[in-house]
Length: 339
Image (cartoon, rainbow, N blue to C red; front, side, top):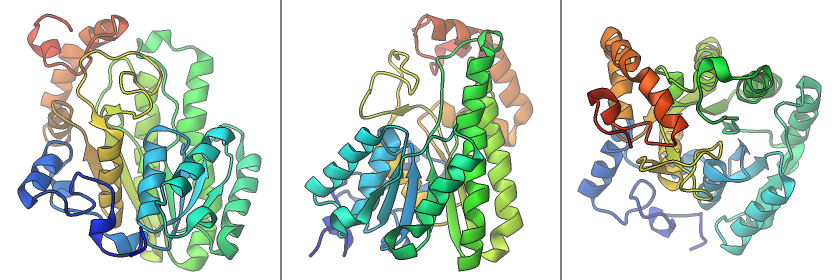
């Protein structure tokens, strides 16, 4: 059987979300510890959702984006991988080929350099190139994964340059790309945007005010977009991960700040859950370990309690971040020794 084109057993992942290597009980236990209840109920990815589809991934040169590219290749997708760093994109493409992950081989991976802060005119040119690839097949999925995050600090300590960089990459870039690509999807009568937002786009994130603002903006825009165009075949899945351990830098945040004893979901697990959520057409999915998931539920269903909790720990969290301690520790609430 050709890898990436057949049953579930040929997939090289051992979490049980993609593939049958784990028992039913273990699979559900793993989902329960890293996702919301709706995602928990969905089991594994639907291969047919991605097989032979064109999937465009931004921020694909490392971290979750790189892992998503490799998993999607295994599922038989045709890939457009984008980022600013073209040599790293070449590395990802070569690894997909060397590992024989996809049924389409080298022809199934196209590299399209993209700087989301470059402005709408430059992004328009990239979109036109994207829809012309694979014989003009267009784009079936866009995974908005690229993001800018700076080290945690108080809202007062964020310079204007960092504010602009964050909003350009996290908000303006994805919205511009979406606006330019959406008409082509509407002509086809279908399209699916998978938006890598954040838990910081659902709850207050002391020490990450600007980053949080950018993710709240993404959530609002894409949920509204889906409501406008859902009846015309446009789907949106907003994914809100908590702390994620990137495979290329397991002891750092995406901004390069060293972490201490922070329990993080692996990039591989996160990517698998993203694909489960998208393939089942979920409109929103949460991915995190505790206590982040519990706080998200509190803010969602008991906002007064959730906001009280965040107000209580906010200042301590910023102080802990400055010392490179565990900013997700329960000790922030109960006043134990800071980690």
